[in-house]
Length: 329
Ligand code: AMP
Image 1: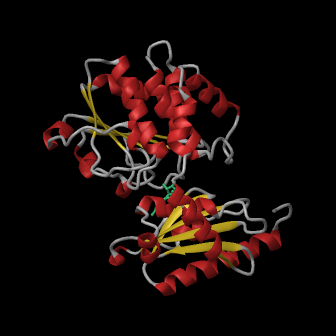
Image 2 (image 1 turned 60 degrees about the vertical axis):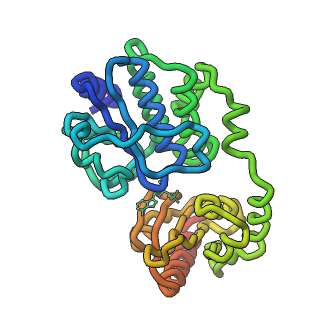
């Protein structure tokens, strides 16, 4: 099915329902929040009579400026609703498990497809963001859909954050044209970028600490272990601690980098964020209770030994990549 045909089928399915629930993934990020809020805003403008809700018990300090989601809904509401899940590869990672009650489900995602849980599954793994897909849905049917500055701002936010400000692979002319279409709606980028990128003084101190304590393996896997003690010392939220991964980006010869972040409950394991350039890390993540994109994945380790094992595997993967490829930096 072509991109236009699948978005047509999605729109027709949406028209069949009076009630719509939007879902996203656990550990929310700019893309899943932007895509769900952006789609909700588009649909509310286009179909003012429909009752459209986003219910998510989780929150994010970083994204709080986008405003709250809707309050809890009874199961009965879901049973009559169409569920649309954005940016979520497998059903276990959907943040509100009420999705399972919905009469039908549409999946809109840009991750490697592992779980076809929708009656319509629109998956384009080459797209840099789910927000770009929602923007494409709008662009394909602009003659019958409505948009405003607010909806465009949600979508533009996810396009910017999930693509590392339009730098990661997957960005093409279509991405920039769709981003341009959003900017044309009057997005206030100065305020948006201030919300996204201003840093607290304490966070910069933490950044300096990360640079002091990062390590690298012989073959170029850089890593940092953000312990619970460290988070207490710098007064960091878990979310702020997780940002440590971005500080390790861009070290010459280090083709992959990993951040191990301890959470409040040791029995739930240590969150691992994996990133890479040139080489891939999703298979490494899959071997440790995780998965994700070729160059951006997540995993969990359950002991010090597993953490060390994962670092050894990252080192071995980097070694193999360097031995079999040219042109890496
Ligand atoms: P993160 O480091 O949490 O931002 O994750 C990077 C990418 O990997 C995101 O696209 C996530 O959706 C995906 N991801 C993270 N954790 C997991 C997991 N446990 N299983 C599958 N995919 C994951």
